[in-house]
Length: 602
Image 1 (cartoon, rainbow, N blue to C red):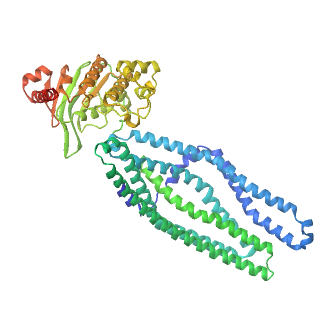
Image 2 (image 1 turned 135 degrees about the horizontal axis):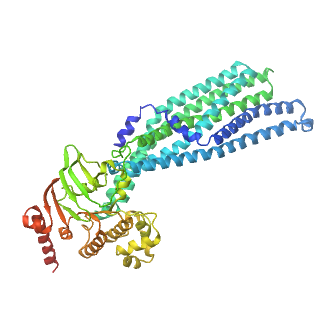
Image 3 (image 1 turned 180 degrees about the vertical axis):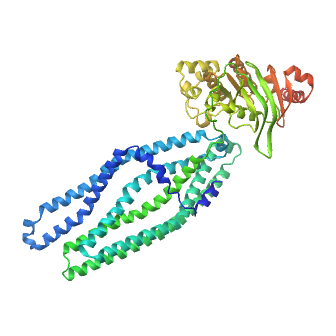
């Protein structure tokens, strides 16, 4: 997906409207920008004045003999030269300091905007994204914004202003020939730089793509560290990563060679124009039309004009790259979430906690329906379990209830309110979940529990830990509740992570609880402990249980049996066994398997 996107951009004109999108960030600090621009003008005036002071100093020194020169050295000119040099540097430093706040605030604003936008995007986007590549796109995009703002305002504009001033002064003081050489060489340099940079842009993009790809591969492999170890695939992972690095190395080599061609062409134009300027000035001095001071002035102006011009080539190359990176960032920002609140979405008000699925059908793709005309209800305070074989659509019900996806047809109601018309924030605030796979943040156990309600007091967090029967485990740890759980909670066992998830849900205190196969991966002892905790927190709450082990839901008020996306049976445990249908078949199979396990262990 990503490679296609980059390849189609190779010949695509860059979006210069990016500049208009960045203007609001400049206008946030108008006074700073104006002061910075005044400093810029002051620095350029000082810069252009330096060669003239140097010329007059040299000419005055050249008039008298060497013996008496020191007696009549124009001290004022030397002091003026030093003052102008200092002013040039100081104005530049003050300008950069003033504008630094503008660029830093712009990066902060954009970084926050992207972060918030990513959380607004739907689950489908996040299931298909590559975390490493995405983080690189964001990093390069925000850095590109900073570069673009600083260099467009303080390098390209001032350089063009200085070129115009120098061409005008040379024309006024020395005639058309000197001004024409500078003008022609500048035009040739800019034209060559633009054409050559456009040619090599594809190599820059290839490097970026290879960089993102290798980074994504590394992060993906490290996030799945345990799986790599389970299958002894360290060498396989290293080979795959090395293949990506080889692609990156090739792309870097092409990029480096194209940069060599660009720099060589630019160096030739600069060398040719400087040689022509110095030759004309030398002939002028030899013929007596110009002084030594004029020769020095021409040399100083030529050096002065080509130093920023040489930098202009680098800046243009970087601006091309920055625009491409910012364009990727704005493409990301332009992505619309598939799940969005309706206009004037109402706050979901949950008083009883009744849930009703009404003729719900859903598919991830039109050719693969998941749920077909599903209807059932959960009365206030009831515990309803959904069972069925893998792929029957059990966990999809949870995703629909949380509105990670919208139903293809039908409706889901909570206390008679259609959740599609309620705000997502108020909906998810009303539901707590203990998922099958609890993912923890790389923080302490205490802070992971507090995540259930970030504004909770320490006492409330401790109370939730006690209710989740997590206290004894925490007390056995050297660092107690401050123990770091590692990335994604890798340092904790499945049962320990589940208890953290239960504590989080207790702290959240939602009226509706969902248990998505919360004990499917636990051993019998851990399962019983978790089930006890679940029963305690579910009292008085409406709860939906997605169950794999039927023994865990025999006490459910109602059991819904799904098969290939359809409800084929409903009732409590005894009623369903009496029907002698699919539920009975599942029950007998699990009981038989359990008996075999017990007999085998004996």
